[in-house]
Length: 83
Image (tube, rainbow, N blue to C red; front, side, top):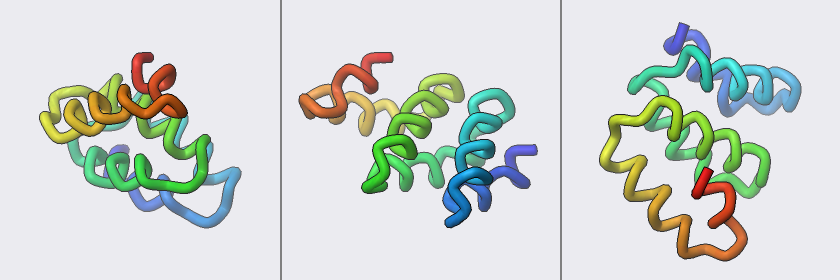
């Protein structure tokens, strides 16, 4: 499932992208971490928030933990990064 979701996480279709981002929170694996890390750099606040939540649920990545820790220092992102 994670492999099928990965390309949909960044699709241009907002509805499909949001659905995939919700699904990866349940079925995501380490395979999705690189794409989710890319989403942390998105200009779309919803994409960033979804990526943070999914990374928190998937866990197990030092790189993800470091990126989320760095986001704690950003006043615009800290509350979401804490969750």
